[in-house]
Length: 622
Image (cartoon, rainbow, N blue to C red):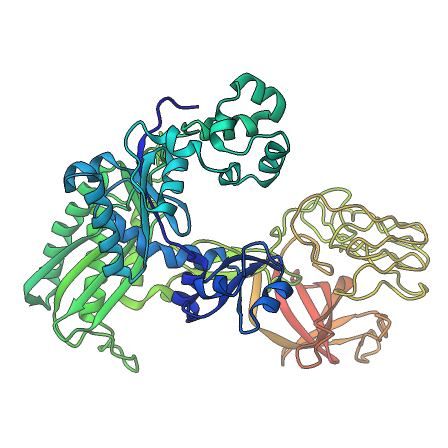
């Protein structure tokens, strides 16, 4: 609780939800309009009130009283957006404005009253300015405390200092805005705020609780908290106008350094540091240029100057000299340069490393790559970000240097294999061999390929998003394909994506909140993902092509692999298949394939995929 309430000036815009609907959606507020929330009227226009529409009425009853009623859904976001210009208009005359709710704002009355020559003069000046600037009608009330000022605004009154308790004493208890409390007070014989305020505070707290004690304090002319004024945003941007258009790089570098020092000094005065810098330029022909630079550390004055110089160099030189490139050079020299700190934070939140973790080599590389971006554009330098996905190509997203490194798909990036993971986990740097007849498809041993269980083998436990390997050569159908989740595997198979395993397999719950990717390849990840898969052919020992049936059964054991026109190479180990049936519900986008890992006699390890009968080399293991 606070002490004596602050003398408060409160501006109230009647029927604001209706006015906001007119400002944003063009609904005429002069007609019969009602704003509804949860099928009840929360605000209505003056014309609707003349027809008997009141707050709290149900939609059908309101339309029954006024058949020509226009109904608008309540939108708090729309009300707040429409009210922002009104708050800005009030801030042009007085500082320290608090938005109580859309349509109501308050501020301390002492400053405007002293500046404009009295409280009534300040109220009239603010009402007039809001009407001229925003074309919005409003009323102002002045009293001790926000609660009393709000009630005074509805009557358009200026309550004299010290007269707030007397002003509130004659008002009904419904003015508290607590219907349940007001109903209880009336049943107890308390009908006015004065009568409620006369009750002992301790008895009110014991009978009505904390909320009742707060209402009792308001009824007595007190206030429950001081004004939480909002601070207008500080304009941190710096601008430089040039009489002579800048069309040379040396002149641009000089202008960049002077402007960067001004920006750095302004940020330092507010204890801020810049992490994202917007560079804006206007040419003599009116052409506007804009570029945003991001930095993962503190941008010093020299760093800001370098980026401005690089960007101006890129704009002024353009790419007209490169064959086939589209010219990007401005049509005239630059006459206005503006730096906007698009991202700022407290300087204390950025602490350089004690032992120089951000070394000189990294800074030099960052400066060089940023310079290339300034000359060729942000997309000229990209870095890879790992995320979720079923295949290695899906898990990688290229982002411009300096941008936020966010994955394209949710999910954890593939990590190292661990004991107890899917049957495809690798150990000791090799690819584990398949389990033999009668064994379980547990973690593979050193040197082999992680494969599914064979000939009556039991599939290992399934994990969220992975599989323990489908049964082969004698198993009755393997598990369902990826994206068809929740089913159970029979005859030794394991269920994917949370399904329960049958025939000895057990499903385990996922460890994290990241979404699973059924059908994801087990670790290790390939070292090289080919941008365009290479066509290949797989043959068995007799030289016949190897295919995959609809039940995910190989027609024969793969023995040789031929990539393109190269000579066939013997296959010494393999694992799979890992099937994927993506977007099967959309025939135009559906894709069904199976992936295999193979080891060749020449020491190479490849990731193969078969799709529509065609074998492809997708990636290469290191």
